[in-house]
Length: 94
Image 1 (cartoon, rainbow, N blue to C red):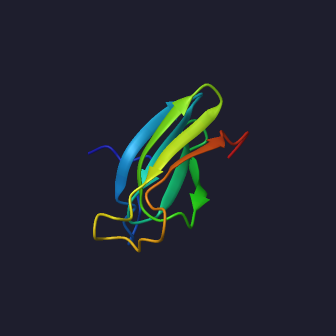
Image 2: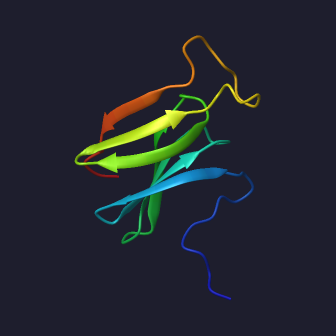
């Protein structure tokens, strides 16, 4: 068996979407309610988006990260004007 590069330990990330840009994997999280950035070269990761609710998918276009929240499917905590398409600049470094 090959040891995984990353694992969630005792908590689940519930990954739901993934995008790749310049050596970094960006992973949308349903349970984690944000986006994780995995540096494949350095084998490190960190949460780069949080407190937005369940994130269904992530997409990269040019120098921006686009993601959609998914809180009205009966599992999240919906608020007025959910669900959203959000655009942010790709973080410079993780």
